[in-house]
Image (cartoon, rainbow, N blue to C red):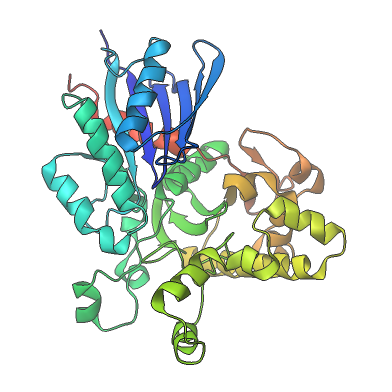
Length: 402
């Protein structure tokens, strides 16, 4: 029997997201989410498209092993179990691959060891990713397990973009450099944008704006990333839901010396209490826009700061690329907030940018252009699909191996 199915797992610290895809036509057979792992109020939501039904269960799920066993049971109820002879591989999202992993990689003990060595630069993500991988390997030790790294797409950046201007020996000793994140999204969206334009990826230059609760920008020249906004960690760059983005490093010293704040307190401030939520108390762009429309000045300032930073990166990446063929908005805010898209390009007509008000107002789950016909730079809305990207990369690696 032909093995055409790939299970994609995204293991967080207290959650597991999953999708089962048939790679013959990239169709989804099942999707689901286990959340609040380790709590008495754990919840598993499972949708089987083959059976056209959604099931939910609540109650304690002790750990990731129990979570994945529950996922396997739900899949088995729909005839899609992990023991299926059609399952070709399990693809795992791994946030940080450092400089070592530049492409999808079949997981073995050496790969696990290197992912573990990278924990100091991804302390919130890589441990959870490892837990999911090890649990899946225990459940199906005979099945290829593939790691797809968030950082991999950005490893094509030149050293002039990836290096920080600090002592080289110190930087190398502690692996300090720009790695970038959301790479699977940027890879997928840049290719999908080229397709929307009727061109090959190597024939276009694209600025991708991944705007969700976490947000990042990338400059993609001929299908290869040459610059991205996130750095050593996902904290750098754009204003985000709860993260500050770009900040004078001396702010941290000032908070320590004058504010008496510890390293952990400052880490919490910048990662969880800053960005939009720090500016106006809300990190949901829909709520912020509602408040703006009602005349709330605090929300208006937060929105303006968010857009100002976005414009700076659009302008900077125009300079980096030299020629821009398209700007693509993606992720939750990018795909759904017409006011953000309009404000981000407003006043940039000299760069060839504009949006058509009617096209921008259309809500659709399909890739689409929102710029007026004949505009020098296409402005697009391209829904991201990170799970499909992981499945595609995983299947391409293992196809024909068994």
